[in-house]
Length: 176
Image (cartoon, rainbow, N blue to C red; front, top):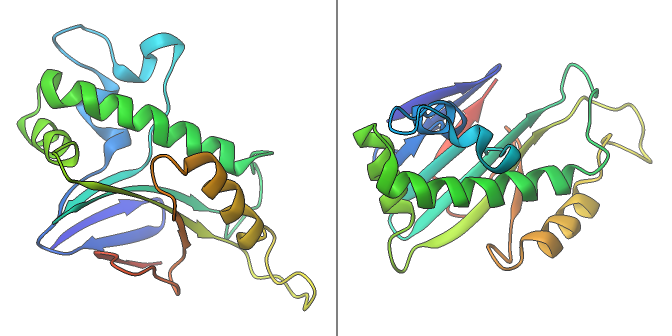
């Protein structure tokens, strides 16, 4: 079992997963071959928080925790997630051959292997709302619809989860 932290959230990944905190990879932050980082490639690139490879699925996991504060929420959270997914896929394609770190290269190669299915998950924690009409600050159904439109070529069924709600096939648990 691999345990990784993202802010106040603890993610425990099953032992059959190859997982990495992609936005902290040395390849993304700094590559010794080019003396630059993929983060600054082509005017700047974004990154999802975790890449998790298990059996026939490669999971791209973005984490947003607004439990303590709703600000700053991007005007279009779906655009932010879609950009991070796109840029991460480009980064994985490059890391599979150019990463210095053997584990990062292995995860990238495994994620890109033939027959692997991509899944996109937004882990979204929201503050409690005291309104029956609007129980959450961000409407998950509307956000999910936008994510489906933007990510349909990568994952036609992206998911939004939180500590109390999982999606089918998830290979991790999350606690506060």
